[in-house]
Length: 90
Image (tube, rainbow, N blue to C red):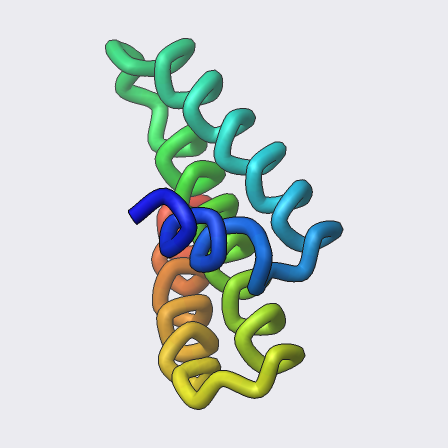
């Protein structure tokens, strides 16, 4: 079980993309807890844009290692970034 998790989450990954994803996820978690009770929608838009960027990096990583589901990740990126831009524009 441990070797499966290590292979899935560490060995088969592109390390620079993995580190950028972790930094963005930690930044999003900190931003979420700082603005948990706030009504301002700009933070919601920023969080969705960060989620879109993380998903985009996942799609790029899947494209690099030649997995087949990278198109799915790119479609999710368009969806999340579109929602984030829509929230920021309104």
